[in-house]
Amino acid sequence: MSNAVLAHADTARAGWRVSSRKLVNFLFFIFIVSGAIAIVEPSPYDFASLIAMPVWFVCGFRVHRMFVPYFLLMTVYLLSGFIALIPYWNEPDPVVFELQSLYLYITAIFFGLFFGERTLERGELCLKAFALACVISSAAGIIGYFDIAGTGLIFATYGRAAGTFKDPNVFGSFLILGALYCMQLIMLRRAKHVFIVVLSLAIIIAGVFFSFSRGSWGAFMFASMMMIGMALVTNPDPKVRRQILIGVLVAIVLAAILLAVLMSVDSIRELAFQRSQSVGEEYDDRRFDNQARSLSMLLDRPLGFGPLRFRNYFDLEPHSSYVNAFASYGWLGGFSFLLLVGVTGFIGFRQCFARSPFRSLSQVVWPSLMVFFLQGFQIDIDHWRHVYLMIGMVWGIEAARRRWMEDQDREPSAIPSRRRAAASARA
Image (tube, rainbow, N blue to C red; front, side, top):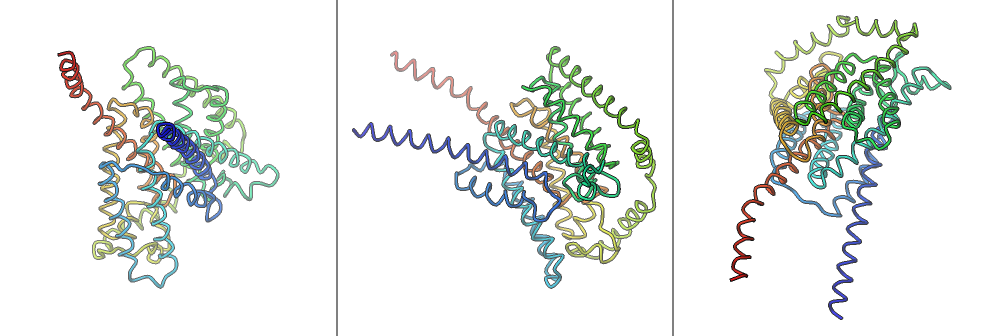
């Protein structure tokens, strides 16, 4: 009787684990898809996080020691901002800025821990949700660009597609991760529904183009070449390499046809040439001049200017996350941000080339994040929600990779023990 009761209890616990796992996955999927909508504040993404993260927390998780440096770097960066805020508690904008930083810090820690377990399953779930978010936002941007049914007032800005974002530059860069995921599915022939993936990729690429963001154009091309190069280098099988090259060829042909069709429209062609040639415009010169002038001023200010107070000195935002790290978070925050970027870059490259079950996942995530770190030199990425998602993914994948390596190291030593046990039993 007791055995039957115990068996029933085990079955009930197993059923609860399966149900809780499905619930967490479902809520997380909604959470990520909601990231497509950033045109309103607070975003549906923020509300979804208030449900998904507590449910995940209650269902339980493990913490690998790999998270210690990640937690320390993120915490020092956050606390340095609150220290720099102390003289300006009576100013609402700096306070709101730091509270937003606190929220993004919490999401970054969550993402790291979340992807540290069931990494392949959750990583695939995340990329599918993110790709769907990209298709939704990109479709809105295309509709807005052509002002269909008067949507240009909502989904376009200054004649450029902004989709469900306020800024065309953020919109264009947001689409990169989704585009790379679709490209990898095509390259490695992992797509179950090829037509849907190809159509999704075409919509996303069109969205990047209609953003008319030079930074997004360059970041997309660089990240794509980086992912393709890594895939070719790390796959020794000639058959897989041929698949990759064929997939790349399909993507290039698709992009070329799409670009040729778009450039046949006079208004689109004129704006594209205008954006591609306006590298030295006055606005760019002014912001670069502000960045250079601020550096000498920050040498005398260990606490920086204070959160979101760069504008008080130069009438513009820093337009550089690295300058802003020192300006808003002080010297401690600036150096901790540099260290976070450097260490994340080191483990990101290592994941992409080291043999592990997570390498293909890393080859989508890290190139997308790396181009954001590069864009950070000329645009403020420090409060982009999807940047914290990708940082957390890189560290979560690293924790999973280290745990996988530890399991591999234990296996050889376990084999002799099992053999000795079997020999003793026979004796």
